[in-house]
Image 1 (cartoon, rainbow, N blue to C red):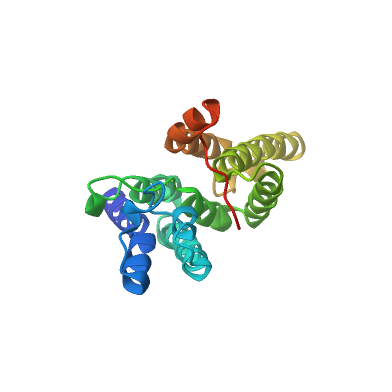
Image 2: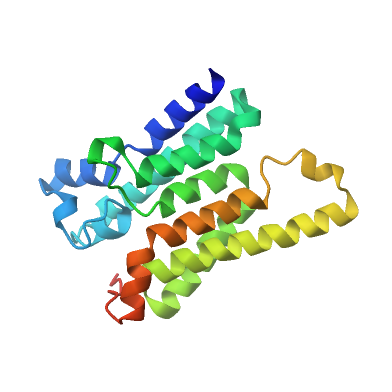
Length: 204
């Protein structure tokens, strides 16, 4: 029963399409018919409304954080399940015929609860890579990879000094590797566009 509870509230939280809701509410436009058709903050930015884009980003981060906070409080042993289903809710929302977003902001919300240090690392890496290349997709993939690699190094250092400390952690690097693979999967079209030199740069 606990598994079903965690799956339900995590997926439901992640599946709320704030980008579509906010864009429809304030501009009366269907976000799915704008730019890439994606429901995330990057595509909201293509409407020309930076406030809505920032608001969408914040809410997508929050919807990734909430189920993890609840799971950490009441279902500690199922926290990784909550992480995965919160992310899958955004990527495959039942309300939108399972056609959702890339999951980057939701991922950020998840790791913010798991490790504030890794979330800061993600943001820093994303910003630096974006300022260099101007591609949101490249920034997201590289930042996610960086978080995974650093988590591996951190685990190695911790285990060498005190293996017992790993047992008390909320997660391990395997969940971050899973997210890296999922982020690459959700950006598969962007990767193809980059290969064919058709990926659009983000203008801010």
